[in-house]
Amino acid sequence: MKNIPKSAAILFMACACLSPVFSAHPQAAAPAGAKDEAASAGYQWRLPKGFPRPQVPPDNPMTVEKVRLGRYLFYDQRMSVNATESCATCHEQRLAFTDGKPQGVGATGEFHPRGAMSLVNIAYSAVLTWANPNEHSLENQALTPMFGEHPVELGLTGKGEAYLRILRADPLFREMFAAAFPGEPDPFSISNVTKAIAAFERTIISASSPYDRYHYGGDDGAISASAKHGEALFFSEPLSCFRCHGGFNFSDATISENSTGTEVQFHNTGLYNLAGAFSYPEPNRGIYEYTSKPEDVGKFKAPTLRNIALTAPYMHDGSAATLNAVLDHYSAGGRTISGSPHSGEGSRNPNKDPLIRGFQLSQQDRADLINFLQSLTDEDVTRDNRFSNPWGGPAGW
Image 1 (tube, rainbow, N blue to C red):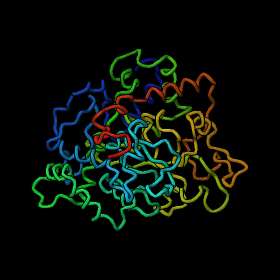
Image 2: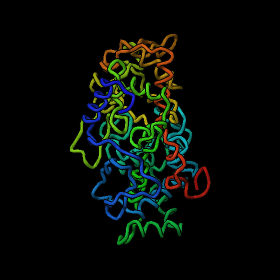
Image 3: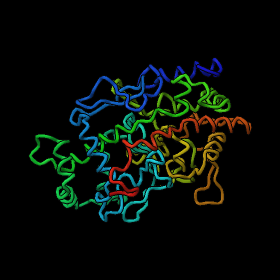
Image 4: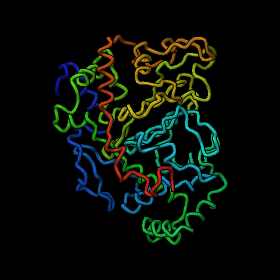
């Protein structure tokens, strides 16, 4: 491990070995066209060397035809009640499949309480949303934006059959559904829609950042000396960033085909500390919304840091506009807010994760750490035609 103090290197390896995913690190990212020889139910994964295959549900095996159908559905605005939005509206390829907004906005203009999470490497996510500890299935999760009412996103509640009629009337979709689900008398079902979308989403894998080329591809010049020092800081004990953002996917909520089970971690980082019974503002009270346990107020998933430079604003509610703001928050051991309905000292939140202790950074250290985080940006995944809009227009169909 290059240019990392021995103590930091040991911590990094320990973190990787504790990851529930795998013990072997990814090596060089696969060149365009490279394929894993081990195919999954007729589909050949294009994985970087060392990346494990994602878990795939037995009732939704990967096929080329299903992935193709899922890509077309993902970008089709006819999925929304007023034909104005698609999955891609909140998950834009150019922004590492986020939307650049503090909060998602549905087809009818209703705001979501949280920001859209990146779909990059979603195949390796052990839990799929900011604050639902029970959501582990991409197939099931897709139903929430389609049919959810609190808030309305795509607005298909009560209109599922009408949507299927639209799909049946399209000659291209008739061909693709028949190919993706052969042998079914009527392949047009909401279940098959979500299966195809999930299959496509599992293919959005990112592993070609400068960081990957440096560490796993042997390109010593892929990242700057500043970024190398920033990496050492990231994996150092005083900062301990890696404890919540470790492993090959820089998250502690990671799973793969090799996993035998993992306890997903959620964290209260001291973002808020409101007076009263709840320290976080509704409706964003973390997994407490599902567990009703007071100690779970303010606990959210630690997202992947891959492509973090493209996914601002940060935190579950988009309340940190820049990476500098994120470092302000963590270096203080929690955010202090004054002169606002949300006033409070986040560092004193009683549920705050003990890992959030605060630390000191010189201006140079801060710049180096940000340079390291920026080295996690994979420009290839933002341009890869396999993930782009197949309908030919930037906005939908």
